[in-house]
Image (cartoon, rainbow, N blue to C red):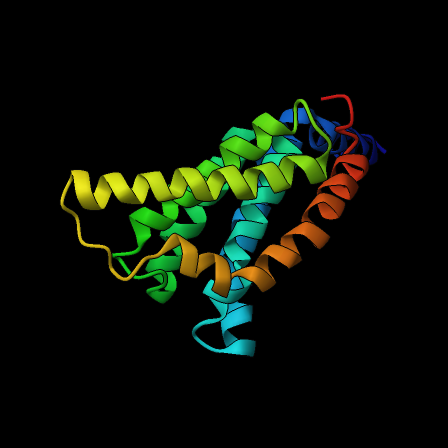
Length: 189
């Protein structure tokens, strides 16, 4: 009988812990980091090596994290996804890694800032536009100010190639983030 009571207490304790906002934040961030590593692999297997640049799968996890949990979560997902993806798969290339990290960090910060004032779609569109402009500035400073090589990175070309990914972001990200916030009961956070 006492064992049953102890088991019930432990189950209740675990349930209470998992309903805690901080636990939701940590678990959600970890799961979205995993998604940021797995999704590019899936796209590469289905559509080849150029799928990352075309469908922008890593962006999806970062944007969902930033919409759902905020800038810090989005930044953690960006950093962990890029580093672990590189360590596990060699992608993105080491030369491209810092540039992509800067891009994803910009997206995480911008979308969480815009989302405080605007609805999800306006926030996402503003992030995509301003994020690309700021990313162009980062590239300009890195290449012309610091003399770093370009590694073939072009903002204009990445926009052209990434249009399918941008469309996926606009269709899926606000919806998924909204559902997550509702299911995790984070509406008022």
